[in-house]
Image (cartoon, rainbow, N blue to C red; front, top):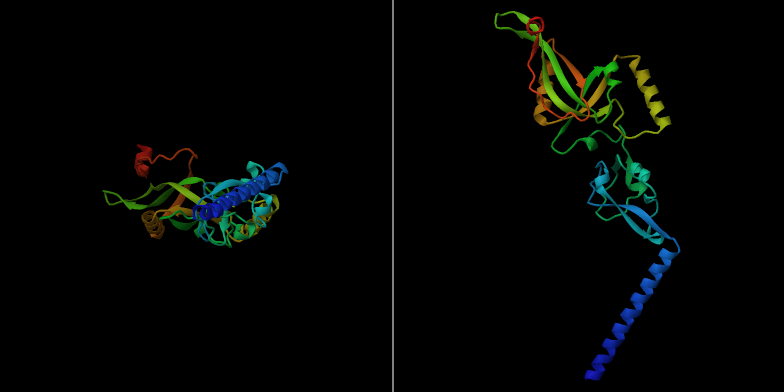
Length: 252
């Protein structure tokens, strides 16, 4: 009984060893022949319509025979820019290769929602074209509001207050920071210049908390009020205590 039991076990072990040797040999041949390729795979589950950032990706070296059709491959760090700021067309499970059919370029047609951080809101405001032309996506701004206030003596006076600080700009006009080639960027500028012939305002898309969005909406409805934006230094994220500016303080 023991001899009859041991023989199949030994044969099974030998078959496993032979199989592993064959697989190892094939793998070594692939590596030796230079047919390995580095591809981008999802480091976590990527949701449909989610904006893809570098921290969602990892690089894996695999035999070329296993590279999916139209997969994004890695040869230099410049290849990462081809995926960054794209939008997932479909859900991409963790560990799956990133293929070109699974993503699309960030654009106004895709929509702004994919750029809005979780628990934040996307708000679009109008600003003078001269201001919009100096601001770029991912800049930070402060928002000021100027309005008529009733002073302690009963007089009315123009005052300006800093309403919101360190607000992230998601987009300027149709530029959502998608990274445009020279031809597309020139075409977009021409379209916006044609549109500016009929209006002297541009638009900023902002990322605001729900409460800040309410305050901004309230400020815009104040009769005679004017909303202004000022640009911040990229490294300045401090929220400052600001006095309300009045003509009395200005001249005294």
